[in-house]
Amino acid sequence: MDNSTFRQARRSIEAHSLTVKQRLLVMALNAIPFLHALAIGIVACAPWTNWPQRIFMAMAVLYLLPAILARMVIMMFPIQHGAISLGTADFFKWWALLNLQIIFCRFPFFDEFLRLFPSAYSAWLRLWGSKIGRLVYWSPETRILDRSFLHIGDDVIFGAGVKLNPHVMIRNDNGQMELLLAPVKIGDRAIIGGYSLLTAGSEIPSDECSRAYLISPPFTKWQDGRRAKE
Image 1 (cartoon, helix red, strand yellow):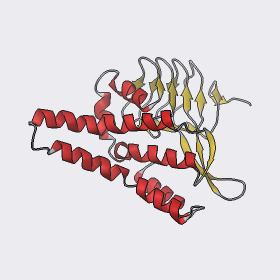
Image 2 (tube, rainbow, N blue to C red):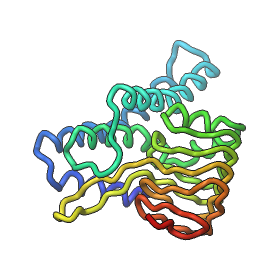
Image 3 (cartoon, rainbow, N blue to C red):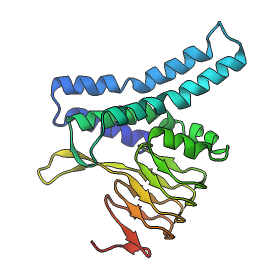
Image 4 (cartoon, rainbow, N blue to C red):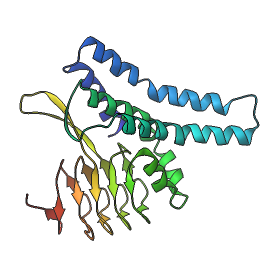
């Protein structure tokens, strides 16, 4: 989800099926990215430490603080997978988790920087709560939302520009907005073609090599390059 799409989703969420109190809660949670950035700035400018310590603490606040908070939310308040109605407790848990990640969505450089160090990015995603196997290769411009909802096997290769989006917003049969949330699951030794988009609940089995520019609708399972029959 790019910045314009995120803003549209935010406006849509605030305008649909929410009471005044729920809208105020959404607005409060929207402040998380600003508070995160403010905390980084305060630590980076702390006058009582030297520059190496400031840099170390700022990096810890940037990368570790939101991941640890997200992990605590998931452990203390588990979120159901599937269709989630706006305004429910599970919806607000997810919205809080999403806002903990917004700084990385808006500034992908932070993800790319972490990928320079072998295994560091996979370990970071595990801290968020995702299940990540060994020797996963993250190509440049791989974009991830919902870092707590990935199930990635061993020796998986992501082509350039792949997007993993474990949530989507849709209208249900009654015309109401609802959230679809479920882990993206990729089996061992799978190769994901460049510039593909895998959405909520998408599953690609072990040893599969998907084509480039694959668009996977929610809860789609793939086999031999085709949608698997239910």
